[in-house]
Length: 110
Image (tube, rainbow, N blue to C red; front, side):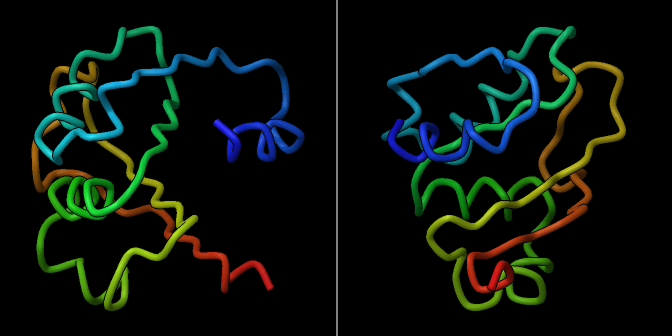
């Protein structure tokens, strides 16, 4: 929530924000289930959480071979993975079928 407060100044418009307390201790499959449960009207969700779950779900979504090539040896604190899906509805998101569109770390912003 503190990170969100800092980031809100950079967002355009007024994004809808939902806090899901269970995400804090969620595993990769739980986060995938959350993505699959998003309403169809949601176009570009941003899901924020902590490691190791978020590195694990990113690897799950884009495939294991991408892990070390794109993420380096670890998914650093405050990293952002932008993952695209070629689906008509979030229910169609499958493991390994995400496309890593961008990966930004704090080091990239210097």
